[in-house]
Structures are given as C-alpha cells and as structure tokens.
Amino acid sequence: MSENIIIVMIGISTLLGATGLAALLWGVKTGQFDDKSKFIDAARFDNEEELRDAAMMEEKKKARKQKQQDKKKNYMPAD
Image (cartoon, rainbow, N blue to C red; front, side, top):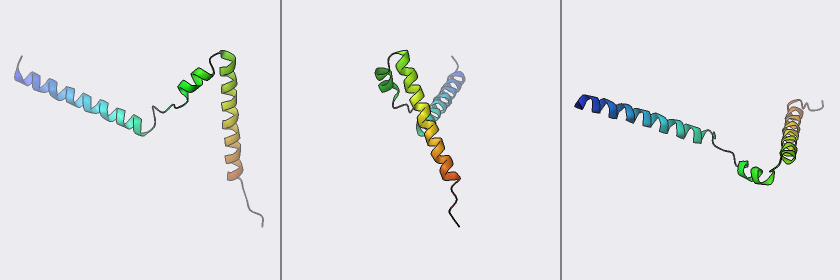
C-alpha cells in the first residue's frame, strides 16, 4: 500500500475515535446513561401486575410533584 493511503486511514480513524470519545463524554456528562433504579426495579417487580402498579405509583408521584410546583407558581401573598 502507498504511504499516503495509510496516513489518510490513520487520520480518519483517529478523527472517528475522537468523535466517539467526545460523544461518550458528552453522554456521561449530561446523564444520558443514568438509570439507577433499573436493575433494582427489575428484581423487585418481576411480573406484569407489579410492573403496572409500579408504573401507576410513579405517575402519581409525578402528578403530585407537578401539583406542588403549580401551587408554588400560583402563590400570591395576602395584601
């Protein structure tokens, strides 16, 4: 093979590797891979009914949190 082709191949592979590393670091920094409860929930809720119950509980938590945020947003002190 020609030396020029090898130099181009090394340059392109280095660029692709650096791009992949940058994407990985960005994903870790922004929390794209954070799912702390995935494996715990998989062991704890292992049938369909328990999974449905867990999903409903999670929705209730989110609704309660949203309701509290709305309360804080609409708060007006007395005159």
